[in-house]
Length: 595
Image (cartoon, one colour):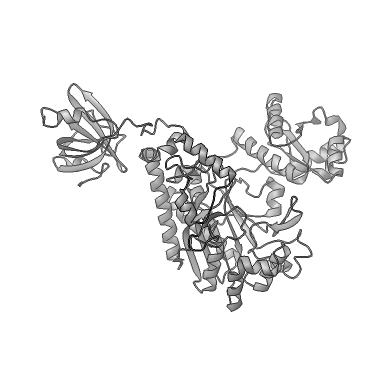
């Protein structure tokens, strides 16, 4: 139906007869001559309806409006001197129309298909098919496509098999809530949609596949935010007969290829490596932004020598006192603003002292003897004019607040380049985390992660010390990926399940197929899952992953375009042996009334 796409015609094509298809982007009437910018996903071509050239289709051309879908046949002409458009690939030519076919007329669009005019989120999601016509969104989909191509090429070059794992799986505890699907042929039974392909990729390693990958759909019923969706795509892979460093090296080379081919950027490898303890100590978070220094300093051992009661009380109750020193001069108004910011993050307040040639100055400096002040200045490396900012609280809260303050200071003070990409590996995570609500231990990542070798024999006796052979990949302060060496010994796996409260019978019910498979000679193996949507967004300095998902959900996990989730009829309910409860009936009535 077409000889060229709308970004292809050049001066060399002058006098050729061409057929073009697309949508009317703009229409301009200049004294009876009608100019149309024709758009497809590749670009734009200017069409000319000139009655002196061909008056046959002038009446129809006069009816053309935004988003009408048309086909034309015409002759390529060089634009008049001075009328070139350097912003268009086809800006040196225009096509004089010989024939016009209107494929479909469009009603007035509820949103502008124009990058310069962006509608609100809900309107964009409701009319996503129009939003995706915007050149910017077409570029984002193309970018994602190209990243996927780089991924597939890389894994193919490294002897991986692309294997699809099932979407209808057994419900197993993996952290978030499962989306469940009732079975019609097995009344009262349910499938789950996979939160990740975790168990199945381990089964593939036991199956001898050695190296597996897929662009996996992962579905989790959890609260949403801008970088989280109920369904997302993961670059998922697993490798046999490897150690953790082999996996991390592979990912570094994968990222290098992706960034070089899609952004023409050579990222530095190897990535910086930090233990979990080191990352929490220096940055207050396990996903540090290392584009700038601005490290945190634990000063608990110094400030308890002072007479400042707040610090002494916190320390005596098991808390810590840490400070941050941006090495910049800040006015009192700025400091008050940062105090207020810390309070919004849960801090009771923020203490501060200004560094001078004579020592420290502030309304609390009098409580700190000269020797203590000198120790603080020495440990923090503070210079005259800068300000020491202190948070005193329980360890977790202190780190949380200061990590947010660190990020805000860096942004406010222009301490990094927005266009930089800095990766870091965080490893030696605790294998277990204590749950205050249930008063029990639970996995830090997931229960299939291997303990470090020195903890295998007695992790039950010292869970608070036990480190796992697991790691995260952080990019510019955002967690991009998690990975681990897997438990390939069924006896160790059974011990770990028992330790978190899953007895042998329950383990058999939930994970029996995996535990049984390991009885037949499973290899050592490990792998990772890398968030594709998040990676694409971050590569384009965008926080909202919905910009790189064709049909995302809103914050209520709803799709305004197709109006899912929706009610099912009584026949379907009966086939599935389901009934609405009282809450569902109220929702049913509400939706019915709205319709």
